[in-house]
Length: 143
Image 1 (tube, rainbow, N blue to C red):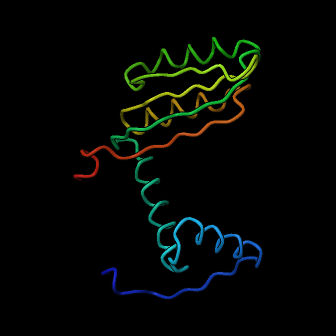
Image 2 (spheres, rainbow, N blue to C red):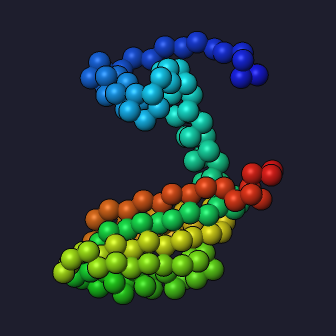
């Protein structure tokens, strides 16, 4: 179906959620209408799902904030990272305060391995916040 062939559908959302969505859309995109905003969200979800494919070539960053005083967290983080040296391109470690650290890993590789690494690290007790942000490499886009 061509993008000009549009299908209408309706959704039901709480009024306060729609108000917040409209405010966000206005702040971020000016005069973009709701339909285009929803289309963008659908496209983002589809791209994220495609990148999660086991054989997709992805690049990205994994950001973690953690309390390095939590048990043997630092050792466990290091042990896991040593199992993924082919996927970890670079790391940056920042001491935020006496307890908290920010660690950013630049990652590259097959989606299965990159997401497996992220899942293992982010699930560790003591990792307070974390996010993996990925994009397709050019070879993935050429498929």
